[in-house]
Amino acid sequence: MAIQMDVLCADDLPESIEEPPPSSLLCSWAQAAWQGDKAAEPVLSLRIVSLAESQQLNHDYRGQNKPTNVLSFPMQMASDIDEPLITDFILGDLAICAEIVADEAQQQKKTAQAHWAHMVVHGVLHLQGFDHVSDDEALQMETLETQIMQQLGFADPYLVNENNAKELSVAESK
Image 1 (cartoon, rainbow, N blue to C red):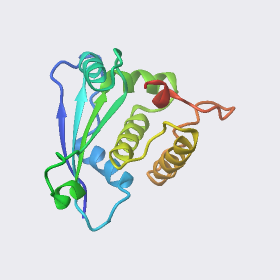
Image 2 (cartoon, rainbow, N blue to C red):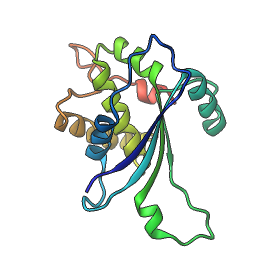
Image 3 (cartoon, helix red, strand yellow):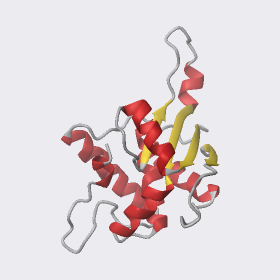
Image 4 (cartoon, rainbow, N blue to C red):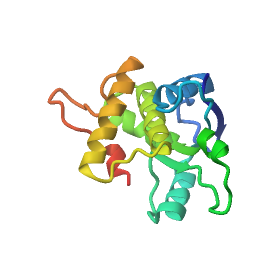
């Protein structure tokens, strides 16, 4: 079984931004990050957003008035609705800012594809309850991200130079 993912792209992306990866590739990265029942068919939506939309979402939902690379909105049912089957399979929504992904990939000396894969993996893990608020949580999440990225054929996303310095763009974008 496979993750079902709707991919929507904002109309206001600058022409200078490289075309985001195809839906099939984005979906395969999300599938690699799925930690649940491999027989399940979880559903999520991914919206590729502009800087302005990312900033507005980050402001509205996290109280931070700046754009960020990826935002995760896990599925939350109203407390008076008892629908475990729905929440077991609807993961939620991701918003990934194409302009930030392009800029970070260049700054981190990564391919755009590698950084897109990392943002999808990172976001899907957040949808499943992983977080990086505490040091212990960050270590667990980063270790899992690195394993998934390496399984996909990419390098450790947190290595940015020859000195193996930790890259903190995901955490810094909070």
